[in-house]
Image 1: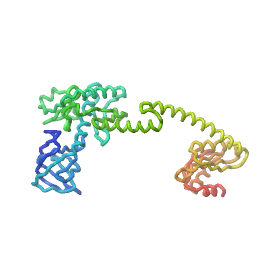
Image 2: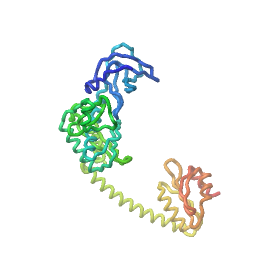
Image 3: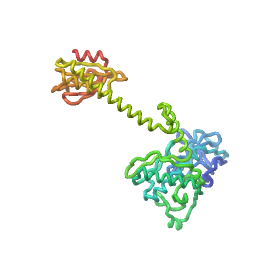
Image 4: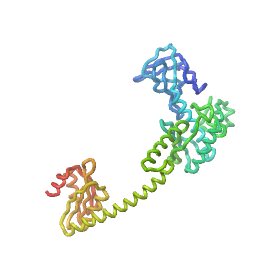
Length: 383
């Protein structure tokens, strides 16, 4: 086994380093590079790995396997050679902000409610935290407020390796029983946790945390949140969306919600008016076919509910079956058919087979769709 000096534990802010290539192994379509020292953090503990380059070779993944630190590349490096490593600092610092923000939030949740962080994932846009207890929005707002106040105190983050005896008296969080050398990360006044990840040096570097959503998950909740620059990115997107909405509504950016409420009220009034006009139209259509035989109608741009209502209205007055078809955007037709005291099941089955359709319902009323032309539909009904 090749042991690698872990520079990211000595200095989480080290962006470049020089190392000796100890071994280069073929691995699938690429290579596993082992160095005598490295600042590349491997995936683990919910934190994604670092990316960057070794010389001119891109580091695509970093994993720790059986105590070895493996750098995955698509090109080989010569064993025994010296290479300059450069990590993607923007990515690393973003992950440090997210991870440190998660610690403060998890610490305050545990302190206030005794809930444990039982799941943690850092995605490209947001991070998720799973807690084994229920939190409502009011409780989360209080946690968010306390977390940001702690961040703005800008206190130093403390990292220690206490002995087993010392750990017995420390109320640190851990998802499993730990032995041997244990790394303890302390955010004074907020969290004390066993952690192998990289963190900011002072809480102020986190910037801020913002909760985006909370949903029930298993026996607890799952929170979506962002920290650091992602908070600014989030509010920039929200602000831009709100600006566009304000232009469309001819309202000031701070008054868009009121404008939307007015628009919804107007929309409701118009919908009511359309429904009344539609009902009057269907009543007139039904009167037109009163006492006559079966009726086949084609209508444009009708939704399924309107097709149903028209078919039902005419079926109540005519002396046979009423079938209404309305064309969809993809060229198919939605349909509804009704017949007072009738049984349309066999007819519907034959129609669906002949016109490549699907649908069904009660004996006297059916709905569905067919993939056929208007002529093919008329031909079927005239046969």
